[in-house]
Length: 200
Image (cartoon, rainbow, N blue to C red; front, side):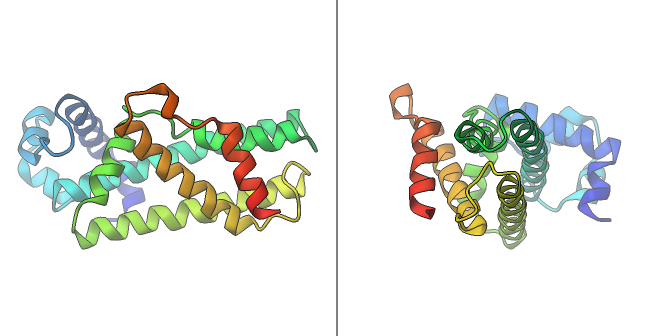
């Protein structure tokens, strides 16, 4: 059964929702498959039908979250292009939308992302690599769409810009979780300036 089939399965959606609740209560490290089994009311066999470990389950939740965020971003930039064609505001808004969709320190996706980076698990590593490649490819497509509509300068290398945006995005996630001071958070306009200067 493929992951996409999992996501459309009601039982698996129930597992994902329960797991997110427990993560917010206890944190990633303290959450166990036993917790998930007890709270979901499902059998051990039902959980292991989908995943072999909690880290693999966390990876699938993160993948689902990333796809959801990217869909939100896609809607945002499509609207930005329609409302502000060929303008500096439109290009800034496009970059801003990308980072705003990843800006919640208490979002389970961000908590899982940080946790999974510390795990030595080949299946999890593969999920993280798939997420990286998926996000880079979709980011590149959207930047090219912005270029075609005059929102992003044609001189910018779309693939490099996508990689830079992801680099900042990963850094923002870590900063938000580690910092307790609002002053440490980077302004979106400053990120946009750095990216634009680096690529033009």
